[in-house]
Length: 137
Ligand code: DQA
Image 1 (cartoon, rainbow, N blue to C red):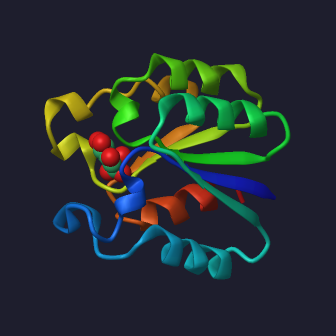
Image 2 (cartoon, rainbow, N blue to C red):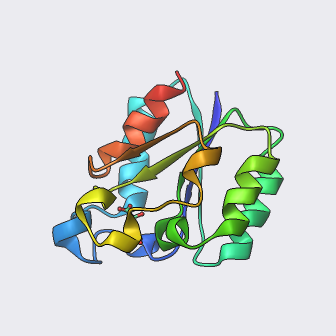
């Protein structure tokens, strides 16, 4: 299966940023672990801090890939455009969050993406990504 993980804003700082919430591992090293754990998947990775770039990437891959694992970061809670992009493509998307957003500030409780996603996984640390990949196998 051809699957892309898309990370949104500030997730390039994983391992450095708010480590008590997001942990000490940087994403690229975790991505290597995922490739080992899921040898049958063709895994791709994209990260951007820019809303429109994430929309463009969803359009680019959304008719040819088998699945998307998307952590849109704070855009989850603000972006009608990313929600619409998910609705407009054919490739199924799972929304993931490292932290349990429901344990945090109220503004993190709502997602503009979730209703267009297959499902949502949050709160399991970086393992949330592995659980999302698992859901497509
Ligand atoms: C996050 C949760 C969001 O609320 C936050 O803005 C992030 C990361 C998570 O993975 O837990 O940037 O998506």
